[in-house]
Image (cartoon, rainbow, N blue to C red; front, side):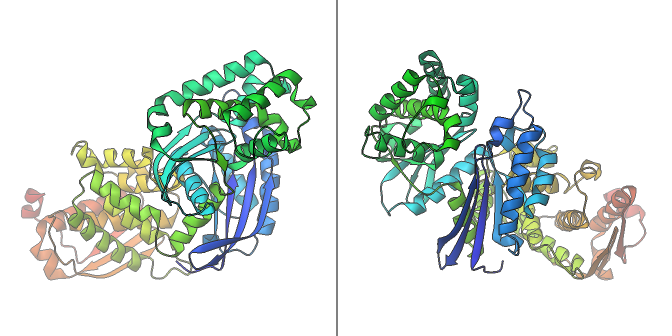
Amino acid sequence: MADYSTIAAVDLGSNSFHCQIARVVGDQVYPLDALREPVRLGAGLTEDKRLEEGAQERALACLKRFGERLRGFDPHAVRAAGTNALRVAKNAAPFLKKARSALGFPIEVVAGREEARLIYLGVSHSLPASPEKRLVVDVGGGSTEIIIGQKHKPLRLESLFMGCVSYSLRFFPDGKVTKSAMKEAETLARIELQPIVARFTRRNWEQAVGSSGTARALAEILQLAGYTDGSITPGGLDRLRGHLVKTGDMNRVELRGLRPDRVPVLAGGLAIMNATLSELEVESMVTATGSMRQGMLYDMLGRLHHRDMRDVTIAQFMQRYHVDAQQARRIAMLALKLHAALTAGEKQPDEDAPRLVAWAAKLHEIGISVAYSGYHKHSAYIIANADMPGFSRIEQRHLSQLVLGHRRSLRKNRDQFDSDTDWRLLIALRLAVLFHLGRSDVTVPVQDATAQGRKFRITLEREWLARNPLTAAALREEVKQWQEFGFELTVKPLPEPETADLAAA
């Protein structure tokens, strides 16, 4: 991947959208520009989890403005990610197509724990270096991420389905705040926290840190009101809670430091933060300037400097699922060689494609740990549904489909692949697996490989095919598979089937 002097991150949060632009100097990023708009996408979710037109229009208008600022950036220098609202919205897919067009760059949707990892990465880089274990709490618009980490490494990651937008809409409609509603909101937050309390309480960390809008807003309000010295404490939150309940209406609340766009979501954020401090035994919490968008920038920096978290995840999955590393290496090397040959004539090759086929080769057998029968289906399911740090949901689905299609019928990929790039990745992987069915180090004499539309041509040494009748039989079956699916696969000089071949097959 090329080096870039300027990179950008776009965070499509459930409450606000952010665009952070930074300059790269060595292993550090320095902010150049920051844009923020209170889109409140999460407030546009209907009861049946669909994004309303109004919320979509606000989001698209914002992304067009961000897109203007990012015009001229290389696609690999910009990363855009959506969070909880887009994770749960049933109509997220059609919206994301329009959103990509408005922004001018691809938009991924990250899983909850991946969001937590990126948050911690951003927070840890914004704080002084320390050997202490830190608890990081990020109350977002639709979800709350809770992390324990040390230095730049997250140790425990959780994402809970509670946020300042969703809680404010549910418990404080029209801004009305009552004592009973506040108690109900805090109780529900405590219930959400119960499954993780044992792993995140005070004995597991030394310092508590609040991240992003809710934490920083609360800290500023508490300080300006004279409730604390700028930290977030249970006592300070209780005094603020009492003030909101006494006023009874967020539209009539007067607090220094309270921005107009924060008014509709403050009560929900307060309830969640109050419950979190109580359940996790936090006596005092400082705030950090780092957040998910800064984490995205540092994650991009790691990729640019060949320290990609996705490579670490692939290695961990191989170890966790007891993958035959030698076999994975054989298949990855041949798949990369075949893919390079098949795409040699492309004017604008996809820079990410080789990594994708290599990752698929390394993970295609993880399902064997579940059961050998139909293991490709088990592998695909694990990849699609597991928490894979560094990977977006879109990347996981793409990788899952490649692994699913690496053997047996091609029908299961019919509605999933819609580009020549996908099919060339798949045929490279399938042929690499086929040539190494013997699970030994053999040199496959591929003399040539070309692709033109739906036509593939592979040329092998005649003597090698004659010495490997089982492989020749498997190749004839592979040719049939692609023909039935509307493709033309030609393997030269593949002999006609003989009785011995068919019996062996």
